[in-house]
Image (tube, rainbow, N blue to C red; front, side, top):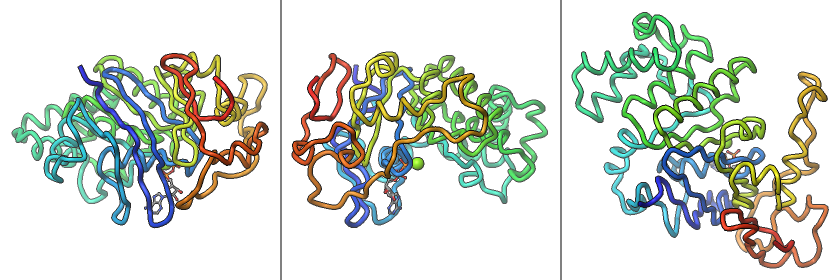
Length: 317
Ligand SMILES: Nc1ncnc2c1ncn2[C@@H]1O[C@H](COP(=O)(O)OP(=O)(O)O)[C@@H](O)[C@H]1O
Ligand SMILES: [Mg+2]
């Protein structure tokens, strides 16, 4: 059986900027695959490219982009919209951007189902109330009649998650779903996503820059840098044996419980993510890398550390 989501050699550019450069990743059924990397590395663009929700002006190509073996690059806009309503859903960092302030929670939740599944209003409302309860919202009947601005940030994100589940998706893409929330609420939402993933057997592509989250929920991790997936491995393997200097740098930035005070800024890798223009060659991390030498300006081979662990670096496997 084919994987839930297969991405090979994905390229997305905005004018002369290469936002995603040859990225590959696979999400298996029922697996949480975390995509990590600093801001600006191409994580959101990768997710939007999969959902075919890229901004106008973006150019997308891929050697393979498939959902349950079905080629997404050949699907019509209508076919893609159908898939988004029925099989794959996405939640965003800031729920207010995807909730419409003018409509009640109930009408937004049921609209999804009525449009995509032709359900009756009654059945759709029942399902919406069930799902609100499922994501830990008390008095769901009351919440259905409220408007987004009447809810706290944490409640809104729960509503977004419930809305994403309305059509019973097999793949949930969550783009930094907890970044905009308070720390305590972040942990609750994360626990919720992890339990839904397990109980519903969802495939989840979880985008985060928080490696603490990754350690807790991911089965597999892909690390993105400057538009490329520079390392991918099962979670325990990645944490035990990181091979790319960028991954090693990210892992050094993880706070050690008890040693780092609350609100203290985390350590970070000196320098910034470069913007990549056409004709760029070699390793995009070389300016920031302690191990860089002249060969890093040449084409970089992808090494296999083990059968399911690969990395993009001149350093030998
Ligand atoms: N709509 C857009 N127009 C132009 N450039 C964009 C657009 N969206 C993203 N980019 C660029 O693509 C790159 C990757 O962005 P993004 O995927 O949002 O990063 P991440 O989610 O990893 O923080 C960045 O250089 C960003 O400036
Ligand atoms: Mg992003």
